[in-house]
Every structure is written in C-alpha cells, then in structure tokens.
Length: 469
Image (cartoon, rainbow, N blue to C red; front, side):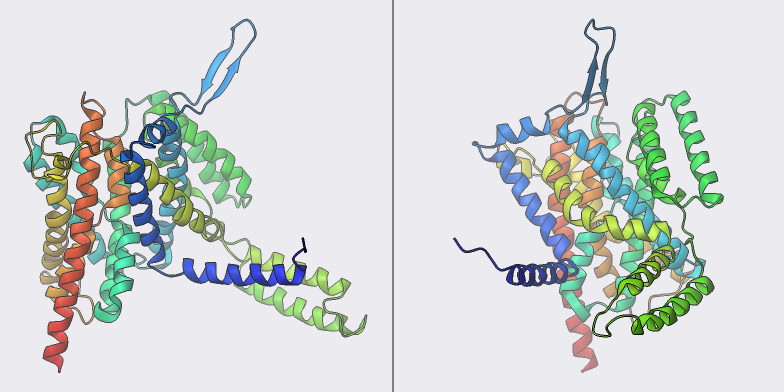
C-alpha cells in the first residue's frame, strides 16, 4: 500500500479547512444544523429499535464517586447528574457564558451601546415577552400548567438569522439589525426569567458564598488580573455553589461573562509603538543570514514578540468569545437539540396542540399562541407606542407591514424555549407529559412563526416592488 505523500495530504487538509470555514461562516449553517438535529432526535425517540437506548443513554448517571474501604467516606459529586443534566447544567453553562459575552459586547460597543440605539429593541423585547406570557396565562390560569408561562417568551437568534439570510435583500438592513438586537435583549430578559422564576429552593448560605466569589472575581478584574485560569477556577467554584444553592447552575456562566475583564492588557499607543519598533527590527536582521531564508533565527524571535503584543491587544472577553463561539454553535447547541428535542409521540393526537382536555391541559395551546400570535403582536404594539410617542425612531426604509412581518420571526423560540420547558412543571406529577407537550408546541409554533414571517416578508416585498415600479 502506498503512503500518501505529505504534500498531497497537507494540500487536501488545507482545502478541507477552507471549505469548512467557508461553510461555517454562512449565516444559515447553524439553523440548518439545528433543524437536522431536531429531526434526528425525533427519530431516535420514536424508532422502536433505538428509542429505549436513546432514553437510557440520556438517563445514565455520570458522577465522581469517592468511597473509603470502610465506608466512612461515601461521596457522589455532583448529585443526580445524568448525561441529560450534564448537557443542560454544564454544557449549557458555556452557551449562557457566550450569550452573556455577546450581550456585554453589544452593550459596550454594539447595537445596545447607547440609549438611542437600545431603546427600540429593548422596548420591543419587553413587548415580545409580556404578550406571550399574558396569552399563555389566559389559557392556563388556575391549572397545573400555569408555571410554564416563561416558555413562549424567548426568540432563537440562530433560526431567525438563518431565515433572514435566505430572504436576502427583501428585508431592509435596518430591520435585520433591529431583529438581531431584539434577540440579544430578549436573551437578557430570558436569563432574568430563568434566574428569578425557575430556580429551586434557595440555600442562602451557599448564595452568600456565591456573592463572595463574585466579589473576589470583580476585585481581581478591577486590579488588572489578566490570567484566564484564575477566572476559570472561580467559575468552577461559582458553578458548584449555584448548583447546590437552588439557583440554576447555568446562571453562573452569565455572571462570569460580565465579570471577566473587557480591557486589553496593552492600549493602542503601546501596541502601535511596539509593532513599529519590531517591524524595524525585523528588517534590520535581513542581512544576518542568507536573504533567501525568511524568517531567520532572530526574526523568528521578533515575530513571536509581535504575536505576543497582538495577543495582548485583544481583551479577554473577545478572545474567549471568539474561541468558544464555534464550539457553542456547532457542538453544544446541536447536542442540546439532540438531547432535548427527542419527544416520544405515541400517536398523532400529540400534534393536536389545540386540545386542552388531555393530561397536559393547555400547555400546547398556550405556547403556540404565545409564539405565533403573542410575539409579533407584543413586539409590534410596544414598538408602535414607543415610536408614536417619539421615544424611539422607526428603523430606516421600514414600513409597518414589513415591521410586523419581521416581528413574526421573533416567534421562533426553540433553544431558550426548550431550555425553559426543561425547568418547568417540576412540582407536577405529570411533568414528563407536560414537558413533552411543551416541546411539541415549541417545534410546531416555531415552524409556524418562521413560515408565517417568511411568507409575509416575501408578500410585502413584492407589493413594495410593484408600487416602486
């Protein structure tokens, strides 16, 4: 058997990496991948040959067990940790951490960086949370399902951006920016909803220790601590305290995102001075060895110094977000979808989300109405009031018809909605039936919202083009 020449191998790998990078940069890639994972999860949960193994795998315990020979020490850590909980309570910490970093960046430098920029998306986001919650509560008030009001309040930015990229120039750029900023503000509200309403019994001693850890991290950041391992160690301690204190463990990721330094080690004048100095040194070493050899020994040292300076000019928040984003988008979120979107469907009546008489009551109807009707109405109504009272201005080149059509895409809930669904109804005997009904409603409602938004955007765009002609 002939070995593959190293040049051919390296060339093939380079071409593969270029194609992979090009594919992952497409705005629709993540949405398509998540959709495929949902389909696979549904098949795994319902095909007779694999459904038992799928559920058994997710329910497998993964814990560290410390036991002495005489049994004096018998510790399990973390308690009640299954593969499904590992995904939802540990891997999703990284997801919430990157969400926190994104919000922090947008508040500092992006679409939420000034009051003028932030007002309309934030007001619209509150409308998009309040209206679905009200509709859900009206359907389920006084029932066991009432605690699920937070499920239809979230917007999934991945699917929304995926659809916007497919629709292309039919949507004004200003409305694309508006929907993205709205989804970020929506994530922040969803984080607050989870933290305030979907935790467990609070252990105030552990909560107080958590506050101490957060204060230590803030002090280290204030006094210029730039080593990531210090914050990683504090993040692990904070996760443990949150996990056992009754506050959902994923919130530790959000807290650490806002704590880690946003200031680079080196400032602009220093970086420019060093780069100029090292560039001159790099040229001065050209004559030391054969000119055809680049870089020579001293030049390699100079290039390493330039790399170190460039690395120090990027703040920790940016570096960490840049490093984690591909893992979150193409590993953690797909795994979350595989673990949580697999709903066992005994018969087609499960898709009858309008039925309020079954075990799950009005869970499905409340979620569906919240996503498909509550989201666009809340976003549009609150925005209309804000614009008419001159608190905010209408996005450029946008009319109310197109605004409402884009607002319909806000009803694509998916990731955050499913996450809230996994935390809901914990004190109800029929918890699994309710959560499964909720997941079905999220999938159906998100699909309906995406189709409705796409159709309305296409229709409004055609009408506008006809009038313009």
